[in-house]
Length: 286
Image 1 (cartoon, rainbow, N blue to C red):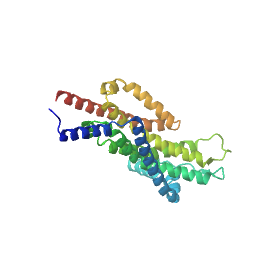
Image 2 (image 1 turned 90 degrees about the horizontal axis):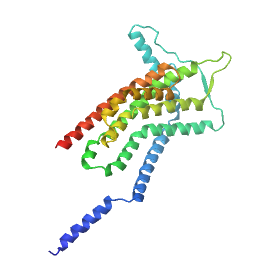
Image 3 (image 1 turned 45 degrees about the vertical axis):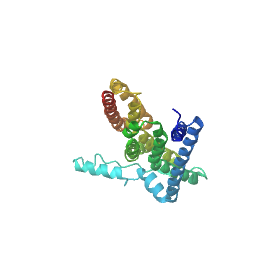
Image 4 (image 1 turned 90 degrees about the vertical axis):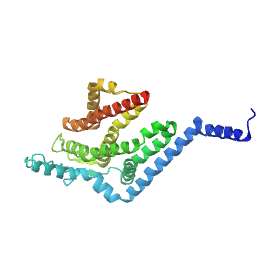
């Protein structure tokens, strides 16, 4: 039977749609480039706002954990009184000075801190752009099941960053600043070292809290299973301790502070992987 003009139009439309869906490697690179550009622009835009909020960002946020009136110290002291420990759990941070060592340090460190703020606050948008790049390659059902992964990952990252700032930073600063070699040695620290300590702890904690998101995606791709995660519990605990020792000061208390929530997230990841496996089994039966 000879195809009608309408049939030919349908074929041409299907062929055009298939060409649009089957992007070449260079097309994917071009698409990825624009996603990266948009992410960088968002980080720079947020960083620009932070740059003009110099007083708040530097004095309140960055230098906050070294001051006695920081929220972590005050709330911990209130909790100590509430449970009847009086001032035993109150922490008074040591007094120390931070100073610039180079003529160009004030401007470039201000720029560095502003971009760091842009990265932290712009991380949810980074995940959104990553999802926009990955999602076209997923099936409709997979896209539907993973729809909330951006929100879930963003919440976990911001929780981790908050944990790093309000918990890790005060204890790390308190430990390092109070560590003495000799009374004659004055404690005037390089501001660059101080800022690096704060930013690295906040960023590292935020990334560590993404563990459930990573496990969930790996489970969705069939690269990891809950049985595997359960069998490697002991190994995972050791890895958590090692990572905690790397990103925290060399005192056991800080390592435990990091290890406990990260290991809880590991156990939560097992539950997520089990949920993914049950969904896969139900789909196979249906």
